[in-house]
Each structure stands twice: as C-alpha cells, then as structure tokens.
Length: 61
Image (cartoon, rainbow, N blue to C red; front, side, top):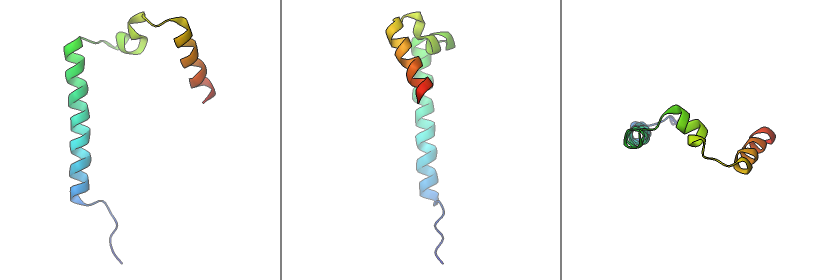
C-alpha cells in the first residue's frame, strides 16, 4: 500500500508559508506601533452600526 502522508516538500511549503505570514505581521506591527488595544478595539474609531453588525453576526453565526 502506498504511503499517503505529508511529504518533505509539503512540510517545507507549509513552514515557509507560516514563517512568511508571521514575518509580514511582525513587520507591520513594528511599522505602525500597533498595540493590542488598537488591534482589538480598532483604536476606538469604529462607529456603532459597524460594531453592532459585527456583534450580531458573531452571535448568530
């Protein structure tokens, strides 16, 4: 029976993707001096209809 596991090239591609995404995220955070408060609360700049729609969507889905 043929082995259908993940090959070494697949693991290399997955690891490269994860490292790339982390690098892009870390560089963008450093560039914009983003904090967790700015990230989760959008800098407190969102209007109430957007917040309400996001809240209701997360509740019902």
